Length: 393
Image (cartoon, rainbow, N blue to C red; front, side, top):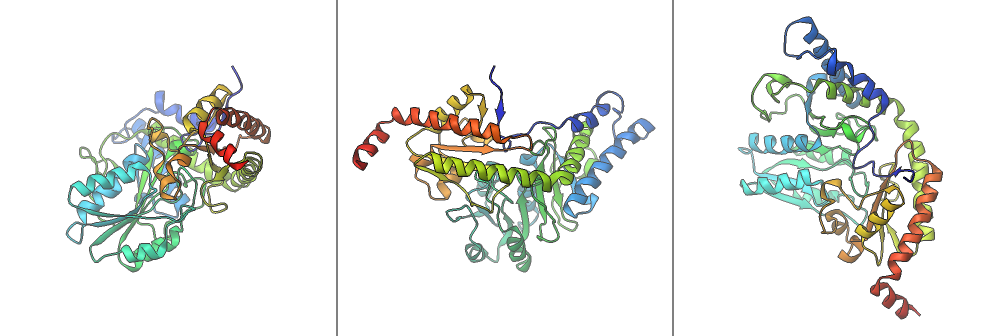
């Protein structure tokens, strides 16, 4: 088997060894239910509380504002559905963008069937929300604005602070899907006027199946899962103690290493982008050139199909993506790439490569050389490319 080069860290990350180590005792030794009253359960409750404090500290929030969930998708659903239901007496209008994750877009589509009205904002060619368009979209009936912190496909970082200020000025709730950004970027909820924030453990070297929703104190939304009194009666069900412990450790690790990781990943990301754009013709970079996640590079290669490219990269031991992992089974082009203005035929030839702290320059050199050979081969089989070359001569 060839050496694996994993460049799909936006889809999921490897669980860090220290995170696994922190979780292990809570499977077989400290396995008490945190809701019970004996001392074994008390150890579990202390661990849950400690993780909550770590996460709150990373956001400049209060521990009681952190609610554990099964991941980013649940957190997004909770934020939008519960807020819409509670504030529907005030209004029925929600504002989001055309490039959100499907956990937001599909939830908004469901809310439209319940009688809510949704405005899907356009973005510019770099995937950035147009603030003037946001301001114009606000109505007296607007109750919620939901804009992702950074895009999961093209890596573009949004002007979240400015969006939060606009929402605050108009007395509108502001939610951000920070699944890709949390752990990668410094986030302070007060500074950005964020009322609700979604995040997921497996995007920052934590375990799968655990995430959280930050809900600012005073924001009135209903419970999402009914049953017991867990999570201050807002999210019933026995807590996933090992997962919560792992999430807390992953956040602690991410915060302490963030600057070092970001500096390394940016340097390697820019090296990769530079080589690809210089050495592979008819290629474009998707997303903002600098205002992007430190580990994200997204390219479109003309005259090829992204699915074929991924298969051939996999044969070389290289893991990449054509977009969101949640839509990898779809034959439709990325909604994000269409939203930034790419035609279907170019959007189909996209490749997302997302680095980690373990990525090396040597690996990227191998990736670029592999890409050059694979793209040459795919283009040699393309009648469109053949016609293009003939016309160019």
